[in-house]
Length: 302
Image 1 (cartoon, rainbow, N blue to C red):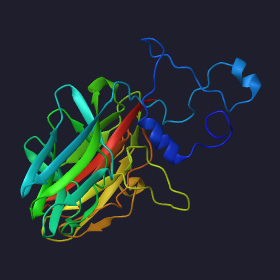
Image 2 (image 1 turned 120 degrees about the vertical axis):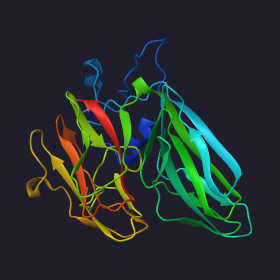
Image 3 (image 1 turned 120 degrees about the horizontal axis):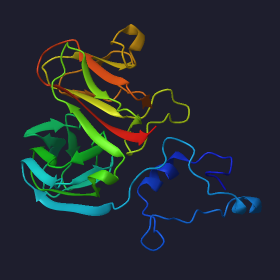
């Protein structure tokens, strides 16, 4: 058997699954009996074994699963969920199913509306054929904060049925802290996130898990998206800058990426982990309006 204490690594898919498992405590306490079934007999007399990496502990207590189902969405922007006061909500990647209930093809986009402005988080379009169903993609994991609105836009057509689930939490119970939106990228180097004192920070990938390298790959799975609707291709650069330093070649984290107009880039990765004081910085080669950055971050005690 694999897992903690066995000497064999835990499979990434099992780690992802665990984040959404609801454990049952004894009585009314946060006390849980560890499972030693896969360990040698002698280990049953040792102190409880705890997780050995930054992915533990993930605080998902008091999470409430909520199924969201809508039929015959109309053309334009549809507000399908508003995060309540005192809550945060996570919408994992690739858990939005759609069915075109009409006789014509339609084009669908996703947005987060924050502070009265809608920020696109999907590609230019996801086409849904007539009388057809498919999985729709948000491309980045979403952590909605109180007042945030998740929107489904029907650019063309009407009559879309959709279903997805989200997990709603009290704000204090969630290690997944933020979806960070930088609304106006330009030629000024912008600090879009600084790791707080006493914390480590881990960008979340598509499955709301920490960023990891898939087997045989040198590129992390998607944890960051830059969208460009400025009218021309823009070149985007990301830096990881230690506390007290300034952006420059020494701290450039990824190759400068060209993002074509009305498109997004999923190749502008952030580091798998950052420590207190580290700054995530980003800059474009042009001041034209219509460039924004979206990513989600998980904070854990250092």
